[in-house]
Image (cartoon, rainbow, N blue to C red; front, top):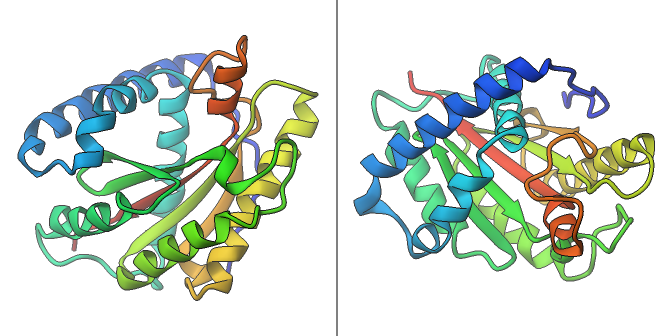
Length: 227
């Protein structure tokens, strides 16, 4: 059963700062340890990926991981045997990094974050999937189905244009649209949830058009657990 996408997280700024620093340290350490295994896409975006893990964006990742853990605690998604979770996620990362319209970030040994290019999925201020997005999402769905021991959390974000209420609702509709499409392509709904965060967790400044474009995004967080 799919959980609601309408919950709006409320966390104190102290928690955001603490979790951001924790995630940044873990991300940097993990990347240093796995350098020999980096994909070509990893090497290209390492600097940007680490930078994006700071501050509010890091909190969004923390929230996504918590949602994934709730899914993984259920009976629907099995665990990866022993210490093989890193290799299990490596294989998914290699596949996902080759899909056009995505950027893949490995945030920890058991977690992958897929960034969808905003102009690939949606037109501005629209929650209707664009025609070009279907090929990208079809390929993502295919990989997710090949690796059934991961939970998936679709996370919708907007820039600060418009009211908070409008942006919150738009982010929820966009996340749900991606969720519904993936389920329609065969991904088990019990492995997934969709959440909208509105304008709360930007990865760039909303003072420029380029920054706003970066903040209008849908991410897909994939997480596994070891048995």
